[in-house]
Image (cartoon, rainbow, N blue to C red):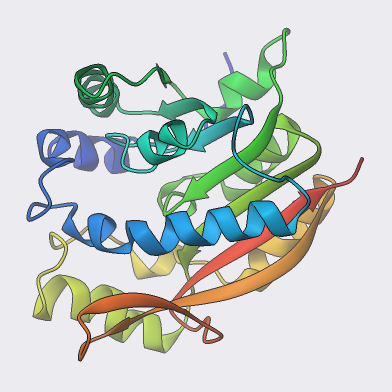
Length: 241
């Protein structure tokens, strides 16, 4: 039995709302709003790390949910594998991809199982977006991600910083005041600072090359990239060849 970093309570929580993944006004509306920023950032960083385009690149989308990020990556020519610990999420993702005529390798499972496979499949790009704050074993999760990344490959991770500002905005503000997210979506105690994640990447043979923040502008009602990493942030790391 492979040790898994999945938190069953977290999986059950997201499984209950799996049917609303593609509802732009539903429980996952915030992800729909930030998706253009995420996609733009991924494309920019992939090119900046020496990979000219997504065409033909092997991408692993960890915690893929209903496929909000996997589908745009597939449309841009990538060979996408999406993995999620919730079978309900994967069922939704498969149905939606089929309706859109997209070929995406969706799998219900966890990253540790992939990393423990004798026929280890390596990926050029690993995306771990808004997932690490929901796992039970952070070192095990990051270690498995690093193992699955091909030499010279790029890992892009996004999460929420462990700060008082993130408690006020990403937890209390987003869930209790603005009601962007269902109450209980996040546990502030599980938020992680870049300083907690970077050593784990280094142990896995990855070098951190960029930190970038993402903030919401109330006046424009939109998200944008920023140098402020005190709440939402991206980490970009490259594996040595």
